[in-house]
Length: 288
Image (cartoon, rainbow, N blue to C red):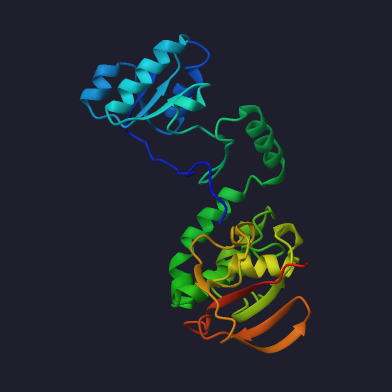
């Protein structure tokens, strides 16, 4: 898989002390961010050390003062963010799109806050204001979904199918939240999510060359079986928690080939663990 420059995490700080050092236009946004997330801002570094504070924002105007404070806070076990100094940061703060409880965080690893902001502004126009209501409705529907789909894989696949582009609960449809209860109870007729084994040949390392169907299957697969040196960029399009398997070409056999882009296949190392599993076999066949 392709490497991440940073590990994106959502950190809960409600009711916790957070150290913010500095004054003026650089420090003020950090104070507001901490307070918006329910944290308690303190500005005494020694107190933060004594109380075991875990997060520190440093926004001194003097560069040397920032370096010294960053070293001291880090030695005390804090994760440190120094404003406009990505080389001194343990973490950076993203541009945030809020559709409570849905949060979309756009980061550039400190390269350009302006770029992150404009990506967020573009997404603001695309994502409906009702997206948070959809999330809350799905949370409320969890007991009904567990009862209807006792098997975890089947439940996840039903959710994937409903939330997919054009699905009954498409997140980009501002009225999807209104259909969750009816959908979770089984009253709505929906497309049966795919299961079984699907295989397709890859001749390009560019994920954009995947067909729409291939990209959807790869993104929903429970297991991905690799035949050959499948490029990391392709594997990055699979679910992070999908099982990765190595295919043995000598033991795999194709059952049928419904079209030249995709085929059902049987692979001893890719057989689904149950009837509700979806396995995708990626066969790396680069063109000469």
